[in-house]
Each structure stands twice: as C-alpha cells, then as structure tokens.
Image (cartoon, rainbow, N blue to C red; front, side, top):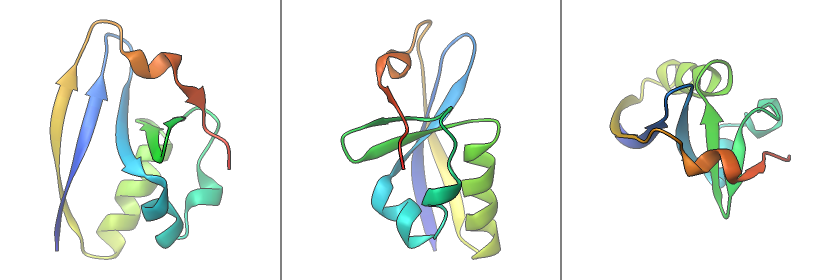
Length: 85
C-alpha cells in the first residue's frame, strides 16, 4: 500500500498533515502530544516526536509513504489550535 501526505514547513519547524480518523485507526491518537496542532478533522503532527511516531507505525504496517511538500516563511499552522485528544 502507498500513501501520500502533506508535509508543511516554515523556517523553524515542520508538520505532517493526517486525518484524525487515521490516527484513531492506527491506535496512536492518545500518544500525540500537545505540540501538534489541529484544524477541523486534520491533525498537523510536529516533525520531531509525533510525526516520527506516526511514520514508524506506517513502517511497522509495511505502508509506503511519500510527501508533497509545502514551505512558507511563516506557516499559518502556528495559528491553529493545539492538539487535544
């Protein structure tokens, strides 16, 4: 199986956009930290801990993934609400 995800970054950090429903299905929603953001049904996983947790889970399930990258000097993601379980 191959999946595509959006990777957003700015001058200081990066995030992987994942639907909340997918995190629930992978049984890792409760492991996501408050350093990630959310907007609507999408969670923006911070690149250091939360995105690594997610990507390791995909590897464990033998799911190949790729990114579509988007970079802005100041990402609007920083204005989204912090992730809440």
